[in-house]
Each structure stands twice: as structure tokens, then as C-alpha cells.
Image 1 (cartoon, rainbow, N blue to C red):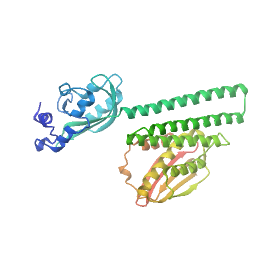
Image 2: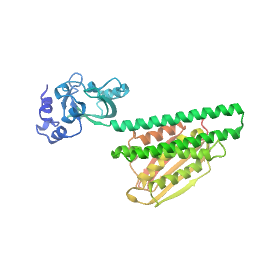
Image 3: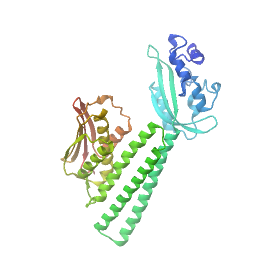
Image 4: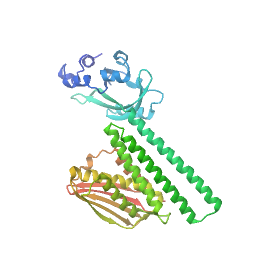
Length: 375
């Protein structure tokens, strides 16, 4: 064991060039957050420090941990792709955050919100890797429960759709009957989504974790947008087209109403635009993300202002422009790995288009371009 490792083991001194008794190291040792330190300069990057909170979380004794690679917490159901991501990040000497299924000494599994980051010396050389853990089992279980419920609802819709389509073929019905069929499906989907929303609201009332509650609240907003999509489809007289203008106008009102803000003026420049119903769900989610983020970030601290929404055809494209007169933001500082941003970018790509943001002291604008008639 090197001198630096002895410092960690005996005193928890992370700033080893400053001597023993470093207050940061003392905080690491006493914090309730489980933490470990490993030494990449030794074979297999073994653990050289572990605090008491980590021992409590995993059930291992200190002498059962020191000198081992942290992979001993992995088990049969640990996701190998996530493990590979961690290994690659360590090899590149980059920080990484990932939810990983780990196992305690007694074999019980738990979901671990793991963060691993390198610690460099003054010359930029990596001396240690620092890792913190949070038990997020309940949060992951709640997410999995929602996914299972969604799968049940989707299976019900598929089963009902097959039944109605079979009846349609038997009776050789025409377009009017097909319209009834699809309206029935959209109506049932909307009702099922409303039911899921109600279940999530009931669950939220019993959740004390504010982070998880915010996650469920965002999920509720997305479910509400999907329900509005199916309501618009159900109310349409022509099942071959989706009235994007009517949907956008209604969703804008719903988002502002849900925010409880009556001091935001909407500048409506929505033209009559119809798109293929196949695009409806993706468009609904994109519009919901852009509108909710505009209301959230463009009118912070209770400030009033104007929200502009413009919808127009442009040759073979449809252009959606959403703007505010807020303080703006540094576009380069937006994390690219947030769920909302990933959702907008991937769905825009799925729709054959893009979404781009511009910002200044006079406000923020997002411009989404999609193909009006995808192949």
C-alpha cells in the first residue's frame, strides 16, 4: 500500500499533498452518503478507502472490501451495457453517472445511483477515482410500475383494435365504419391515459421524495399531452388527417392553465395545418416539451410576459416556432443528456426534421421543422 493510500485508509485525507486532517476527507468519512475511493495506478483499480455509510448500505465489513475492485457488487441481473459504460469512462478518465443494479452481501438487490469521477493531482495525473452511491430502489420500482401499466394499456388497445378490425372485415364496412373504429380506439386510449394519470396522482400523494415527485409530475404532463392528441383524433371528421392547428391551440391553453398563470399573454399565429395522423403522438410530445419548458423557464420568479406560438406550412415542411420575451439563457450551457431535450431531438428526427434553440437578452425561441408528408 502506498503512502497516499495509507493516508486514505487511516485518516481519509483526499488532499494528500496538504497533509493529514484535511476537512474534506473528514466530511467524506462522516457523511451519510456511501462513498469509496479506488486507485487506478494499481492492478485492477482496487478500492483503497470506504466510509461507514458504504458498509451500512452493502452489509460488508471494511476488510472484505479494501483491495477489491467494486465489481464485486454486481450480480446476475446487472446490466452489462451499463457496466461497459462505466469501464469505458474509467479508461477515458472521465466522470460518469448511471443507475446500476447491485447486490448486498446477503444477496438482496438494490438500485444504485452511482457517480464515478477521477481525482487529479497538480500535474493533471489521475491519482484516484472517487465514487458515491445512492439507494434509488423505490424510485426505479415506481418507474417500472408505470412502464408495466403502460404495457397493459397498450396491450388492451391492441386487443380491442384487432377485435374491431376483424368485425370490420366480416361486415365489409366502408370508410364511415372505419372512422367509427378509429374514433373508438382513440376514445379508449384517451380514457386509459386519463386512468394512468389518476393512478400517478394518487401515487404522488404518498411520495415524500421531492425529486421522484417532480419526475412523476413531468410524466403526468406528457401523458396529458398524449391524451389531448387522442381527443383531437377522436373529434376529427377526417381520420386521414390530424388537425395540428387545433391541437396546438388547445395544448397551449392547457399548459398555461396547468401552470396556474393568468398573466402570460399568448400571441397566436397558428395557421390551418393538417398532417398525417401517424405523426400525431410524436408531435404532441414535442409541442408539450417545448411549451412546458417555455412557461417554466421564460417566466421565472413570477414575471409576466408574452408567449408566441406560430404554426405555418413551408413547402414540404411544417414549421413550429415557440418564443418568449424572458431573460434568455446560454444555449451552450444546456445539458444535452436531459430527458426532455433527448425526447425533443429524437422525436424531431423521427418526424424527419429538427428542433433548434436561439436565445438572447430579449427572449428565447425554438424552431421545429418536420416533413408534412413523411414517406
